[in-house]
Length: 186
Image 1: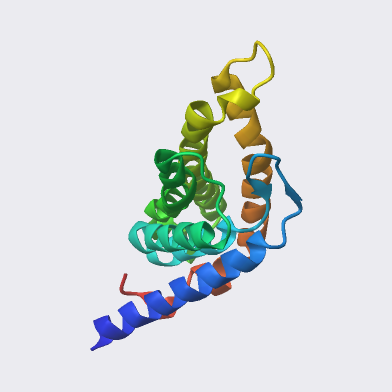
Image 2: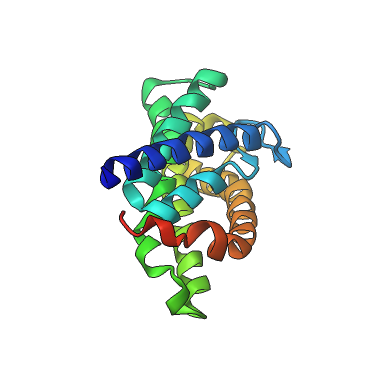
């Protein structure tokens, strides 16, 4: 019964996280011309991943990616659809591989583990968007510039600030939201 209650709690939190991510997506600090924005949309997915682990984090990411797809996608190819929506956000959930390392006992190391988690989730998303950019958006690269360089610069220009902002906001949330003593069973 306790395990079922825990599963219900996780699914409920995933639903709330996805809703919050959608709200954050509608409130960007800036939008890029071919997609992407500086926003806090990754923050709720990162929190789920850090609270419950990689699998729930990845589930939250997939659901958010599918909701994004329903709300106004920019699609040029079926593979790009997968890379830029469900896969990219699913990979943000990889931050959860560090969830067991983040606890009150690690004290000063907690922030290093948090940074590792946020960077891992962000790197996963970056790789997915980067590959999409190279394969499907090369025509936007300036004359003579490699699509690889263009895609890297384009995606880093909004993902890195978004990750930094998410990390800064996660720091004060660690004790009260991420490290929840009620969630002992993962």
